[in-house]
Image (spheres, rainbow, N blue to C red):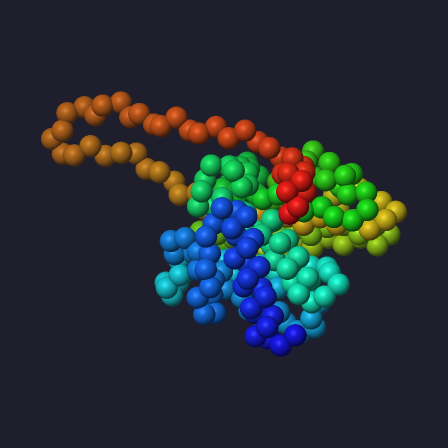
Amino acid sequence: MRPEERLAVIQRCVVREMAGLGQVFTLDGDVVRGPGTTAVAVREHPGGDGGGHVDLGFVLHLGRADAPVVWDCAAGLGKTEEEKLANAVKMWATTTASVLVELADGRGVFADHADHAELPGWHVVQGPAAVFGFGNERLAAWLAEHRVLPALAPALRPELTGTGPVGVKLFLGGKAGDDVAEVRVDGEVSEAASAALRALDWPRGERLCWARLFVLLTAVRPQGPAVAPAGAGAPAPLRTPTPVTVRPRGLFARWRQARRAGR
């Protein structure tokens, strides 16, 4: 498949998968435009081996030179290259795009929100885990029962700089004696976090099984006290809005929902 054909397939798949998340995206040259200033960019995956790999960047403020772009790569399986690319985009939409949509939506519909004491100053948006392979229920159940990101916090903290958003992708699995654990921070492999992930006691079975999940971290801006204008009387008591309570659904619940929906 020629590069321009691959691009066309990937872009069509992005439009379809984002529609599944309730987002209207349309083709516009080299990018796929979404609501407001959002867009998805596509770049050729290094190697160009036709293995169903896609590199997708979610643009938060299209047209701004300093706009953050959250890049992620995904791979898909299939009998044809088109099927592989379609499944790769589906994997990206399920685990990564859902987090970015939730970042703007903020209602806890597409991903979960958390503020971990182990990661002070950072707000976490964590998407559903895609678990696939043989005996995937054991690995999915382990992910639902364990706080993976806080366990990796000592290794992650030195790599969290700026205000974000910082994308963290976790990939783990394999089988007993032949496992893999990789953590990427903004697309780059973190050796320390990967080693910490491998040291966790997630189940290694006799048959191949993997999990992939994506987390977005944004710096929490401290809010200073309100200052009353000069000459004003005593300020009225500050009333803060009641926070919206989002019932945690957990990774396993989201994985089951994604599975039922064919995602």
